[in-house]
Length: 241
Image 1 (cartoon, one colour):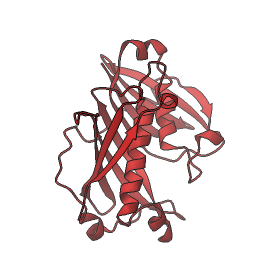
Image 2 (tube, rainbow, N blue to C red; image 1 turned 135 degrees about the vertical axis):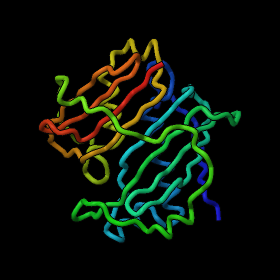
Image 3 (cartoon, rainbow, N blue to C red; image 1 turned 90 degrees about the vertical axis):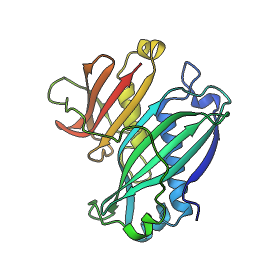
């Protein structure tokens, strides 16, 4: 039984930022593609889940990067199941360059929800546990993020068509994009995001007015949130270097 998934990408110019490098949201897309494909190949992907009237939802993810690929650079992405609980499962990732050297890792927490009630539903622990790998992921798990929504005034935006995913809700990568857009362009010119962590608390829906909040909590560290009617639908932490 092959427990780990291996996926290959090559960076394209239209996927890069103004510096000619892959972005955190694009890395997030690679991770979600690998997660979806790995699950589907093992019988617990999108189609398998919808047949049971359930769906995977991303609860938390932490991404740590030591480098960012440039144009036409190959990326090899490994993904595996780290832990399985009754309601949540951990999925890990390792990104390697063309020489086989790691330049990034990620740890994510997923839950299954009932498509009608939108509430968590118990996982097939026995089935998923057969794919648990002992491969190590050397970064900290996603942790508690300081609430800042009640402490700083936020800017607002309306959820629109291009923000939506296949379930009709605010796309998990769009959360990342909106949060990172709060930083001045000079930040990206002078520094790199070394760790990006986000906790998804509720679903954004079409037409919602959401507010963005950000507060520095230490040197080059920020706590952030996206809120609806004063209540956080996600919280995030960003570390720069």
